[in-house]
Image (cartoon, rainbow, N blue to C red; front, side, top):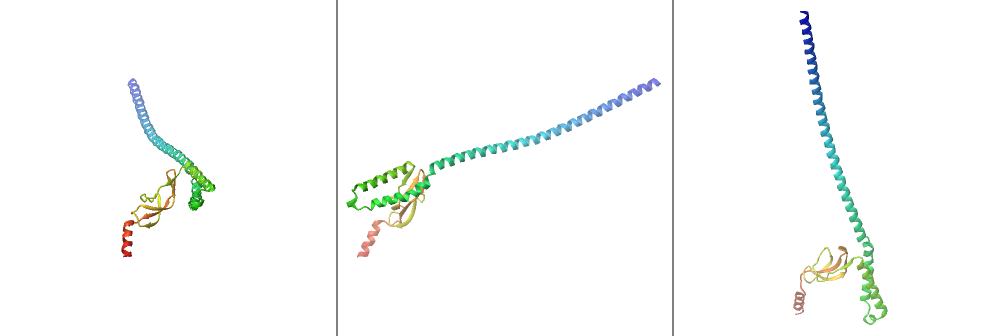
Length: 201
């Protein structure tokens, strides 16, 4: 019988060892499952961070591209229109020269100094045109508030410029001074002359 007890004891020990091994294996699997869950959670968090960083980087890259494009546009505008303030300040001088030449009496119009003044005016205009200045044509054109400034209305074809009081100019495609104009109010010259005939009768 003692031999049977030993067998039972060794069998119990073997069962205990198996239970301990099974318990350890279950515990190990539980730990592995917990580690896997922790790793998956960490991976998900890191993926979210990576996506956030990628989105921020893409936004920063787009901002940089926009900044670069804006800087280049501003540089180009400065190059094209940087001298516009100077040109605008020279326009009244050109207006005065044109008025002075237009007011010269006919008997002095063929003097050499008058020809010299005309030549100076043409050179002055050529220099400004080389910088991109162009005159806005106004008379007989449809009134355009982008190009013309209506100073008064007078009898004539409706919404058509009938007289230019001051020339307007563009620098490249930008209006730097609109033309000051008289705009027709719709009463034609023919109707006015008929009204005058009736009043004279």
